[in-house]
Image (cartoon, rainbow, N blue to C red; front, side, top):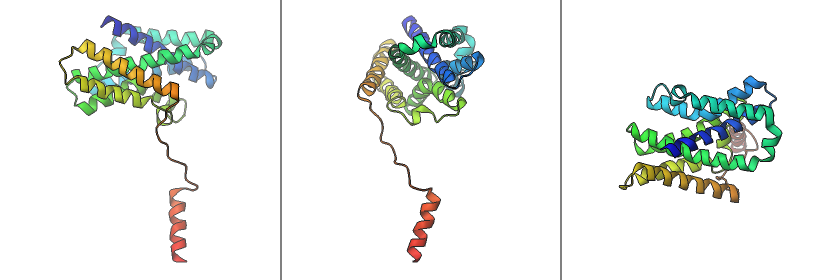
Length: 219
């Protein structure tokens, strides 16, 4: 489990850096950068713990989570151009973080006796919740609602953890296989730029379309 903890810290840092860069986009000060870094890094895990009744949340009992988020914020504040030039590495780290958070979220939910669907949902929430908070704080539509296989990879990873639970595999191996499965799904999505089907925008609001339809029928 020590390796999982190390990967968890790495994923937290990657997510924190991602949140901090969103703050740079809007030219926020060091406090704004730190807030978005922490929200992205630990937000999903904190919501998961609160929903499961695991209080206080892990991020509030282990200060390493907050410190690693602040380190991510400081890295961006002082070295944003250098990090941006190596963004491909950050995307890879983010994918690892997504995979690890998916497995940890699923395992945490299972330990609280959650049903299979809830386990998968908690896996997705752990992996993506911080990004949703980040986007809402910066007044943007959450990226997981508009971009490819990110939340989808986490959700599928959660279901994989549930499926592996029907076997007699030890939890450590289930976690490892879930991480590997989610990482492969995310890597394939990134390589081939996969996206879920999207709905096309309407030429007018639904009420205007309905009114126009009624008027045409009356003619």
